Structure formats: C-alpha cells, structure tokens
Length: 151
Image (tube, rainbow, N blue to C red):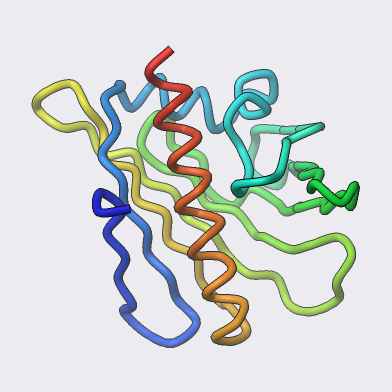
C-alpha cells in the first residue's frame, strides 16, 4: 500500500490518500451514484450488496457490506456538504451499533496530469482499534476505486 499515504494529525482522526488515474468528476460520480458505488465499495473480503444515496444536504445514505461469513454490515449517515466534484462530507455510523456519529470528508483534488488525489479524512473515531479497522477499510476501498477507474 505504498501509494496510500496515511497521516495522524490528531487522536481520533485518520487521513488516507490515493492518487488515481481518473478525473475528479469521474471519481465523484463513482462515490455518489449507487450503481457505480456497488462495483468498488467495501473492505477486502466484503461485497457491497446495496447502496442508497439521497445526494442532498440532509439526505441520507445506506451502504451494505456482506462478508464471507454471511454477516451484513450497514453503514449509514447524513450528507453535510456536497461540492461536486471536489468535496463530500457526511456522518458515519454502523446501524448495528449505538454511539455518536463519526464524520468522513472526501476531497477529490484534480492534478495537472488528469489524475485525482482522493483524500479521505475520517474523524471522531472512538479508539485505536476502530481507527485501525477504518484504516484497513479505507485502503481497501481506495484499492477498489482505483481498479474500478481503470475499467
């Protein structure tokens, strides 16, 4: 994962970056259109089986990850900022777990060569174990997005 640069600006915050050979508009669409999202989303070993996206401020999203053991994990949240094709911000929580919402901001920074740096900032992470899990998950998601963008 040498192309995934991880930073730790402060406890409870994770930043994962990846430069992908696609335009910011293409990647923004892949992130926000359910039929595209389902092709690449999820950590290694999981399949995205459903995606619902109400792309407006205050709109909700729900994404289902099915794991090899058959368990389905639903991620849900509310959009707080939508600036196509450069930025998204939304709350993040697992439907199966109570607790405060985390927050994800995704930036799509167009580069001069036609590629885009995707910067995922995940905030309000409740502890080290959760942060490690999110780090693996985001790296795997960006691997999937990069593979999807090649097709």
